[in-house]
Each structure stands twice: as C-alpha cells, then as structure tokens.
Image (cartoon, rainbow, N blue to C red):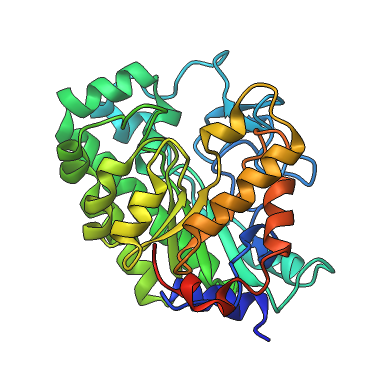
Length: 333
C-alpha cells in the first residue's frame, strides 16, 4: 500500500493514484509560522491573525471567514502603482531564521514523514497589489499603468523565488500551494488578454523555477476563472486549487484533465441550498466525487464555510478507498 505521500506524488505526476488524494489529511503543512504574507499566524490562527505582514500591511482576523483580511481601518501603503519602488518596502529575507522554523516543524510530534510536505505561499503578484492598495486603484492600474503593474508583478515574483529558495534550503518540500486569486463569483478581475500581457510570464517564471527544483507548484486561484485555464496551462501551470463550483468543473476535467490537476470542486449549488440536511449533503458529496474524481486528477475539498460539507467529503473518501480498483474510474470522464 502506498503511503499518503507516495500516493499524492503519483497523482501530481499525472498518474492514476492508488486512492483518491485527500490533501486535508495527507499533508504536512510546513512553514506556516515563519511566512508572514498575511497577518501573523499562530496555532490559534494558522491562516494568519491580526497584525502586520512582512510588507507593513495591517491585517485583521475575521471570524466569519476564519481568515485575516486587509484591515480597512488602516490606509493603503500604496496609492500610485507608478511609485511602487518608493511606497512598497520589501522584506529582507536574509534576516529571517528559516532554519530554526524548519527544525521546529520537522521535529514536531505532528510531523509525519509518510505524508506530503506542503508549503503555502500567500499573496502572489496580483493579490499583493490588492493588499497594498485599494481594489479600485489596483483594477484601474491594470488599464491605466500596465507597464508599472508588470514591473511590480516581476518584482513580487523575484521576491517569491527568493522565498522559495530559502525555504527549499531547509525544508524537504514536495508541493507549494501558491496563492494569487484572479476571480470573483461571476467572472475574472481582468480580461484574458490582460492576464496574458501582465501575469502569464511572471507566473510562468515561478512555475519553471519550482519545476527545475523538483517541487510541484499548485496555483491557488479562487473564483470563476475557467476562461483563464488555457492561458494558465500555456504559462506552465499543471496544478490548480481551489477550483470552486461556480466553474464548470466536470467540463474542465474532461477537457484539461490530461494537463491539469484540480483541488476542490465540491461546493456545488445543490449543497448550498437553504435548509439542506446533513444526509443530503453526504449524498451530494458522494455523487459529486463519483462524477469528477474519475481519472485521478481531482482532489476533493470540502469548503468549511458550507455546512456539513467538509465532514461529508471525508466520509465519502473513507467509503471510497477502493475507488480506482474499478477500471472505469481510471479513465477521465
């Protein structure tokens, strides 16, 4: 029987895994408390709490989302993208003790060498621009000052690559979950043309850098971004999360499952109807997994904001340990 790590690595190598990959249970989350790209993290607030990040942006933990948000009570640190070189102060990563953080993580009783080693890096180039300035100014900047935006995005990617290198020196990283949200609930923040012009090459650089280091890069982008998928693949993205249900996940799996893995895909509308019961959610979750997990490229995620869903997904996965013993489930839908 494959270990959780071996099973996940098989899927990330675009091979049929032994079992449906369960990233919630199958990963060691490393570097959580040393990477301060949002509010400072702690055991109580693993996604980040209230306080300043490395760039001086102040965050506030929101109980409703169980995650930090940029604190609106503090002014943006940048009001003009053409002045980013003077208004944004990059952190000096040489002053951060990554080695001590790694020693603590890898010696923790919670660390399991049989699990996949994952590091989460927040606030990619577009997100970092939204962190530093108002959303209105950021979106207008894409149209009014594309050259300055591209320079800023390149600088952020340079920072991320340095961060990845310093982490890889002390951590045995298998997978980086790299966050840069490009979508709303109804569409993308920008046109496909703008994404291709300003983000394709910077994102492609970090994809290639990780691939050259033997690290899988999973790009996390929420929202309805299905129109970007061909461009994302062309840029070098092979793994995508969180693949929310406002995208046509079955269609995308069918069209791109030979090139892309999908982490998420469970938050469909039927599961979010008012008054839905636990039993109904469990039924929907099982049927959804049976539908989209054929071919081994979907790793189901139960969104914690949807009642009963996370537990329902875990229950369904436990009931499907032999899913890929059925040859029909080894073929993309």
